[in-house]
Length: 594
Image 1 (cartoon, rainbow, N blue to C red):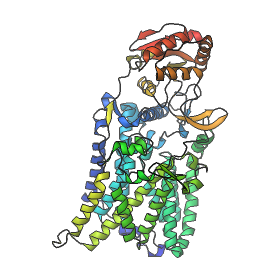
Image 2 (image 1 turned 45 degrees about the horizontal axis):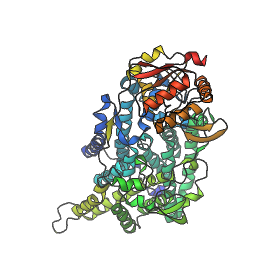
Image 3 (image 1 turned 120 degrees about the horizontal axis):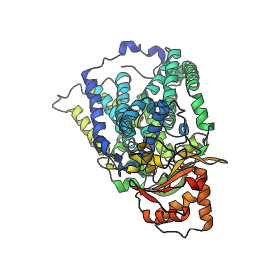
Image 4 (image 1 turned 180 degrees about the vertical axis):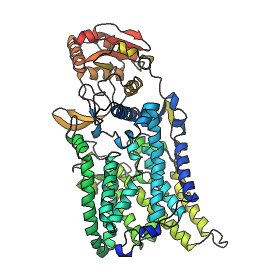
């Protein structure tokens, strides 16, 4: 077993410690894969019928659109970093959104052949299983000698409550299989054997991770810095010897990563429709979120979880009180183990940071500032949801579980001790702690059928070189129109949408969705209230101006709540009646915009 973060001269050559892939490894990985398919069984069995993650809100529509547009760009030799198919005519900066080119581009053939829902299912299922497998591989080859101990740690990394919560809607927080190998390569740099080679490999991995997810990379690197600091405090002399090889390797890695990502990152921060920051307000974890159980855990209490989280996709802590107690016990027990100590320091500090700018205890503001107050206004950190910092605790918890399990197994060499079956007792204790936070299958529902107007191609009679305006315009509250657009082969652009972009041309702060024009706001109000407005002449003139801005060829109303009120409102705004075509009402407005 390689002693991680030992002084370079004390670490044996990796080649001498390399473990062969065995049936035990295959069994562990197979269990991870089966577990992922069980969690997403509802999605996989309903792919052809419009399976939709019930707790994804509108995110599945958005992500499928990202995958579809990326594949379209690849197969049509277009710039994948930008698209005007949404938020027409100004478009969307896809690099400034979570388009995941590192996954969307390689899976473009799958998206083209089978549709973006299949790509979505592969991303989520493969993300959980792949992340668990990657951590198991690193743990079993470089942290502990026991495959059982490594399997427990890997399972927690892949299926922790926060991972499963994000598994409803955020593949960028699920596809983390590269993170453990980035951490391992950083440690190899510190060991100083081959800093040039390790620096090159690290640079390539960092560049690829940028195209998988920048925010989880930032969170995990924060956790690693705290881990390294904890180790350095424990062994300052050894840490000093590691500075030189790590600095050289990091410089090489930075050059490689920047060379690959410099243009995409420039486009992200300075290209068309880029934004400076997105303000979320204080969204730190309530301390109660650390000890409660997530919605989709076996011991989950949905109301209790919702009480201290933003939504079902942002249950970022929820480790459960038994696991919190166990972590305190393991920290005390393993404190003399320098690696466990550094992991524990990182774990507790990341949990503390996740509490945000002020410590809140069960909804009670204590007035005590949290350490996040020092960072939350800094560049990059100002757009991060601080509650997500709790995700950085997951690998540390997993490492402590693995180290503790191996220590128990070494103390009790087998399962046959009749007087005191220590291994069975330990595994029973782990089961009592971990089963309550184990995941349950994620809820899936069937989305409404796409109107035939889009699937059968009737839209081609009404849309030429302009856009198709759906009523109301797509937004983060209702992004079904993005799915209709995908079903129509991305044959037309739509105004509005669900994405992140600037508030306006003179305000580079970020916002979700398009900067609403007056007509879009009026239609959204009608949708919400169900009241038919008395449209004024000024509003009619504004509607014509907005249609011209959107370069609209047609306005379409599909079946929707308060549809009658919307129908009457659009009749008044346009001054003409609609035609019913293949399941939707259509207003041909080409003559109005000239």
